[in-house]
Length: 102
Image (cartoon, rainbow, N blue to C red; front, side, top):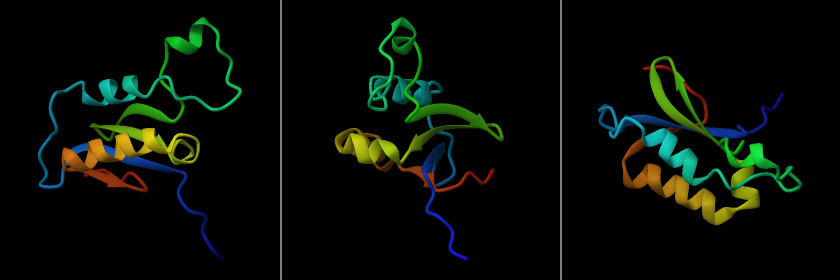
């Protein structure tokens, strides 16, 4: 039985050397920058401009701030995907296909 590839990646607010990433609102800022990227055909009503994109959502899991990034973003907006992944790489953040609490 083969497993399907993960459909999302987790960017954790922990650096590769184990430090908590700052500023404390980094996840909301990153997800806010991606808020305009939405699935094709999404309704463009007033509420759609207030929330986060379903492709890039900030969460706290197991006490760790993270951003959950849908791989659908890579398919629909490759440059936006590169931006998010480069943010993680440039800031030396942990990226995983599944979230395993520290």
